[in-house]
Length: 419
Image 1: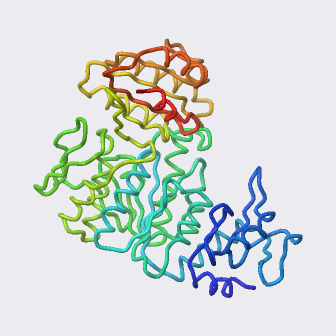
Image 2: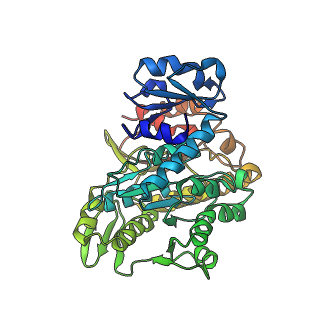
């Protein structure tokens, strides 16, 4: 069976699955492999649960009339997604960046969906598997696709662009994220900029943050530039939630942190570009509620928690600490977890963050994880269990807590110990 024939079956449902625990009826199951699993071994289970066909790459699991044997399932998934993208031929907006890309993606989706039928990356499903699956979630009713692209090494964004072939692109910023894979900050800039180079090479539209001198320098001489810096959008207040003036319309957001102002402004500017009505933009921004441990405000008893534990790097950690420092509260407590994928910069960057946190106006600061445990600072714990044993012995009342760390630290677990 060739790709055209398989595509005919796919178009009957527009469903693709890769996890037999979540099989949908009449979907195409792609039997991906990982370090600890082999999707080929779950073909019978996928068919039993309703999959129409299974794409496999091991002969022993072949079932006549039910499986399609290919050389490499992952490469086939990526090629299939690109083929689908070309058949739909819909406008696609791509986003990447070191910080804020998921929040910005969700804000753009909220804004554009007020007047278009949009679909966007779910969560941060933004890698070499997530991007193809995002593309395959689009269907003929989709009017605009929004694709988030993540990367931890150079050439990854370039590869994802070759699959998604975006028509528009925006980079939130260049920060100190994934330094180990990118080989330093210069590597981050080079790697993330692959999005702009793809767009320029293919005469597509580039949204550029006009406040970012690095972005302006990289895109100098490129065509089809749209600057994201709406002069009519101004930050009014930032504590606790951001309030914005947009074309003399007040927008009361449910987002905290001045760093989110640029994310909001990008969504507004891109909404303007696509001719979204200003009132629709206001309603979309006001109705967006952050979730998934990203800048969430949570009330527990007499305590307020700013939970920002989805991910962390030196740039986002610094922004979060400086923002928390501006909040007027007599008892501010900070719990910081390790930042991952920093390579040889790990010790220096953790020490810098520890120094910053200790020099700001906080009641208590706690550091959790092996990286923080190795730096010169007080109140440090080598692991989560050690910290919790200490933390639960303290009465936490009438406090405002910032909880932030890399995803692997799973610091949201602290919530169950706060009453």
